[in-house]
Length: 248
Image 1 (tube, rainbow, N blue to C red):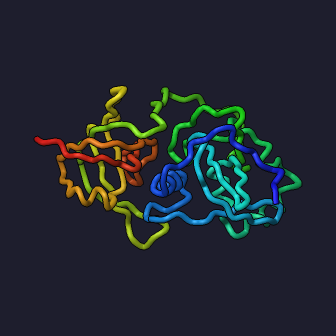
Image 2 (cartoon, rainbow, N blue to C red):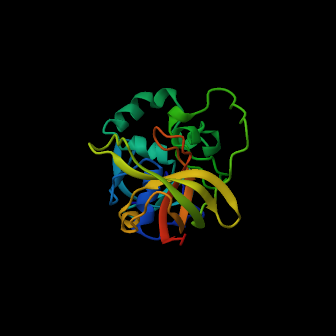
Image 3 (cartoon, rainbow, N blue to C red):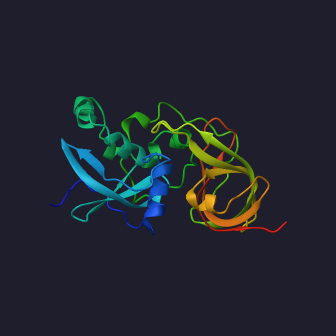
């Protein structure tokens, strides 16, 4: 069965592996920080509930999903998250007569999603408008930014950092807290960019390194704007690889 509501991507970044897929879903808060495997998501529309997979992204605020018939569709991650609620179709039916369909709202008109997910708003491909949640439509003029936001690279980059602290933060989806590592003197090698402090999950890969406070490490990773719960740490390091300790 072919679907006629699709917003097909003219081009997108496909996930290289399941690990990258999981990390991106965590960034979009579609999976908990404890998740170790991907799950099936559901696209809900007109009382339909269609299983789908997240296969990539156009930009940080536009996910690409694929249905069982191999058709692809662009959607805002926050809207996809709302669709996972069991009563989503009921809510959509109730408000349909008095609101604009989410597909009719351009992505650039969505409210400051970066304030919700702590990620900078990227430029939007005009051909890649995506589903966005109704609740996030702007109410009036957007506030002027006080300062220009640091533009972070979309791909993995070479970085250096020094281990500052090991700690835990609450996980609303689990009875156990998440283990995290806080770093200082974090910088991107090329172009040389000093970030200050950042954090990452204390993954099994990092635990194998047996890191200690004060260790300086080099690695490759994606860096995103995502504040650590209860800590003044603005950036998160995703999927660090090729990790090496520098000799003191």
